[in-house]
Length: 375
Image (cartoon, helix red, strand yellow):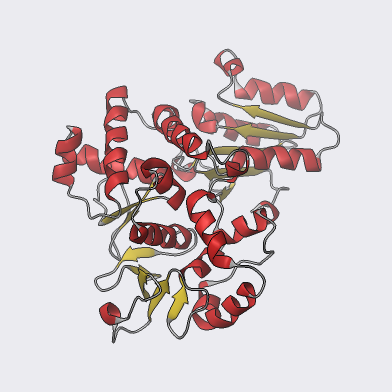
């Protein structure tokens, strides 16, 4: 994403789940771009300094001393962030602002109009393609879904001639989604659990008016989900298990989805919002599955979770009446192992199998790992 950002724009919003590298990206950009460190300033709005000082005052003083680029982290931790950033944008035309926030932050639903001002980018965790680059295994441009559907065999032959792809894919599924895995693999699952707690204990209450008692129920809900996914939710039973009503349970599922902890998948033409119950629920990524469940993870669950996670970044993903997923309201996919057959989706137009434990596919049977090359 770094090279795709229009860094010269006066107002840039960078949102995404916690742990995907937003802060690191800001700091790397500053280090790379500003040899004169007086021109750029990085601040995190969860710092104690802001309990007695305003962001607007900081911008005024920074601008007065010749600063040109202000990088603001964790805006969701600052109550009046939207109004003050708008005022900075309007009042200091020579000042460039980049700000980051939680994926729960709905920029265009803020209480001020950012639509004419901010360019928004969403940073996701590493794709399998990015993981291979991060590991210096394979430099490779992102593929389109159309490329994969039409040319998967030639693409797979080319890639597997350069690396043993299946062992790398297995590593990625367990620990390759969040870039900080490189710091310490042994404590990686613990750090993922810490991220989950930070999102629920700090980020969620900062964005939504939610009480501590509700946070406890949301944590219990996530624990239940992590042991059952993928599953079709029974809202009545879930509500009873966490001791709340139906509306609250559906709203909690919506929060968990926005926070990047689960993926709520619905049938076609049914929107994802705080009042619709999802038709199927997955944890957001396979690393979360391993961190929250240890080695007790169903392989079928891993496969479907990976596929949904990688496709959701740039495509429409829905449940399917026959098969596992409908993509872009057109393509039907069944997810399985190397011996998966077309029995469940035979005679269905535009139907495919995404097959795990397969290096090279044939016809409409495509290696599952190839869908990790989409971004």
